Image 1 (cartoon, rainbow over the protein chains, first blue to last red):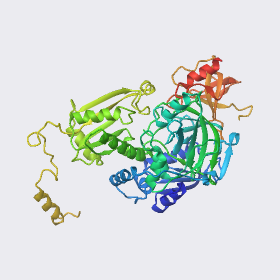
Image 2 (cartoon, rainbow over the protein chains, first blue to last red; image 1 turned 60 degrees about the horizontal axis):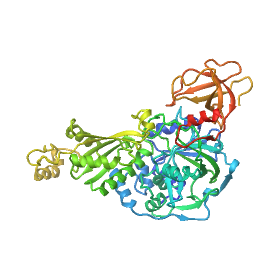
Image 3 (cartoon, rainbow over the protein chains, first blue to last red; image 1 turned 180 degrees about the horizontal axis):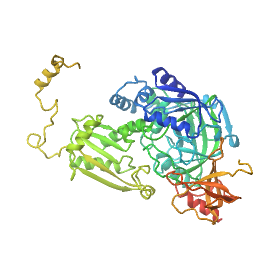
Image 4 (spheres, one colour; image 1 turned 120 degrees about the vertical axis):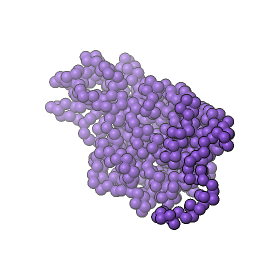
Length: 476
Length: 104
């Protein structure tokens, strides 16, 4: 398994999934534009070796897991592993936890700057999109925080922007685990919250930081289980937080309970910049530690970014687990990459109105990230979007096959179709398109017979045709 | 930093059309567009603005809440700085915190 970002870069180089850019690239929009276009072309991960205004010791690595090939590689699988197999592998490893190992030192301590000497402008934070609120230093990161009451160390991947040499502003959603811990245990007591913004750890640690994981779950232990080896953690310089020892850069901060700063707007993972601006958090930098020749890791957020793979994968498995716990007859869940984590295809053993309502209510009772659900039956491959469209077009009754739930206080505030007022109130809705046959329809008399090769011909005819396929003159 | 003959260029974000009012001393957040490593550095200020920059004024570019740059360039004169740590509550309206700090 990969110890750090550098190991992962080597693996990507070997598999042909890395492109190294020797030409000098400007951090102000040019770097972001190169990353964005590479994402949209399903291009390789990028390593920028020369960045304007910075010495060649400082480089940047972008789009680490923005394709399923790179997700597979991060898991130690062949790069051409199918999507279905990647999902299955994550599900298999997800229940296995290996707690982290605390070590005395690590490469992230090769350089230490404290207090006023810690200047975030020493890092080549990019202006990723024209018109963003600032230069985003935290895009492919791990924001480490600690719940003093439950002793829970939480990892999350949240955006943070440079304010000035000593301050960052950020937007971990108020309904996120980070947001809840901060508001409940620090703002309530008017105490600053220690935070460490980790940049360039091993790829699986970043994966788990972005994962949809249950409240109170230790992402560091999940990372250990997924990697098959404990993540080594080392103590911060200005707090007792523990951070991956092999990280490229660690920015230690205090999140201020009684201060405000402008944050955003920012071109986000849904593929739009929605005008989320101003209502974030404000952080004082207390230390920066980094490896020699540190590599800044970047996710060029937008259409087909790293969220479109990793958040989709973990979100789908989390939905499946939640539905299983609520007794829903779920088989498989797919969050298509193109949906920017806004849509889920849920396959069930049997459907109908009751199952549809149960799913809708279960998935919107807490924070509701998904706003569109397609419910399909067991005979459909949830990963085959062509078949999903067919089922939606033909089986979803336009009058009574569409179920909607409205809510307030738990909507995904980055959803582009919500108005600014709705986003401010965290108000939204989720629709479920029921593409299953009504449960009360008779299979012998009422349910239409699907006119496909595998359903409308006797088994003997199917076997004969398959066995003799090439004899009809077909090449494959 | 701009030389004495060059005007400094700042940028601000507004949430609604008509938010900038000529002549009034307004709390604002400005970001520094001077080229270099510290480009986009933020500053909290009280300033006056004019549609056409006068001689003693810096230039002000304006962006909307979704980051679209408006075509008009204004003039801005910084009257005083506000603290970088504005008293306020996380996840609450930053512009309210800015206004409250200016009124102190």
